[in-house]
Length: 254
Length: 221
Image (cartoon, rainbow over all chains, first blue to last red):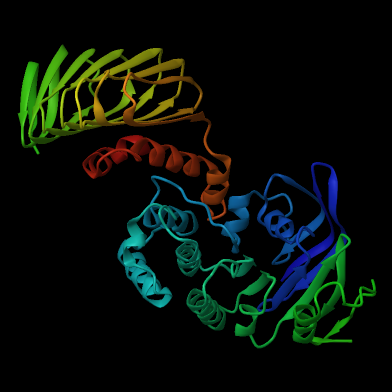
């Protein structure tokens, strides 16, 4: 299980979130929505361990307090962040990076198995196979970069995935492929997923999910699909921004 | 490719060469289309490259531990094309000076330098001079240094006396990029390995596959 407990998030002494609580059970999909600048991406980065943020309270994963773990330790615990603008690294190929990353997790990396798996993933993602041995994200379009990050995901097999607005800047076809691939991964490995988004194109790939609306440094509303629908049809302004928390019982919201 | 033992002067003519240089001064006369490798050489101090008209040279100079000063003079007259690529690591005070004269027309000069300074100071001065009344020359400088315990000093100079030239220079000096480091950490790679990967990627970013494939292991050690 993943949880934020009494979570306070700061950047340069400015508080972004106050006393926030969030529980994500194994295999659950949760969606964070909120206005631009409310701090959604900051939550994602802080969960991954970005040193620019200070966390007070606890980040719990699989019954372990990971608040003070380094980025790489969190990753090896199974946490994976896929963000909206993956960076390019000159001189480091996807294959060599993945080989090293797997080597940090397993004693012996089977290179032939890895190569076979990479080819299969590229086919699945409709990604040119040449990217396997190309420098990470160098010369790749926005859509290709997100597919490359998904390729990394399929190889590293995380158990808790954070998707930070990965649907932004993708064309219709790329969105379909990315959504299909994520759904396939979810059905195969049942990871917990935290999605940050402004649209329903990605979340529509999943049957059941929980939605949390962020504002004023906290979660102001939680609900199911209907809350996402309300937000996307009415906008943030016209929602009833009562500060009452909605209580979840057996995946239903009151 | 076989190593060729050279002293004083070598005339290149449409081939690939790995030069094993035993003298402190070498003159390369470039004719036709050539690729040259100079690897881990700390003997040469004075290199002169004379580009024949209509000739092309791709030169790769790689040194995992440079401990000498190097002065390079590149002479181009008409319709020649040089890609000068150099990657090196220094652990002591050293100087690299490159003077590249474009005396005629339709030449291309592309100078790519990568340096990691582990200790003391590396001084890199690149001077590209484009002569008066010349046209259609291209001069590019891409000079990057990483301070990894040492200091990098880069002076990128392009002096042109002609209006009809395309010139561009890019210089960066810094530490290991924090965002790149965090990216690798987020894939579960430990900090020391991630740093090593980034330094290796940086130093080989302007090198030919031949050097990456045959000398990549040196950096790992």
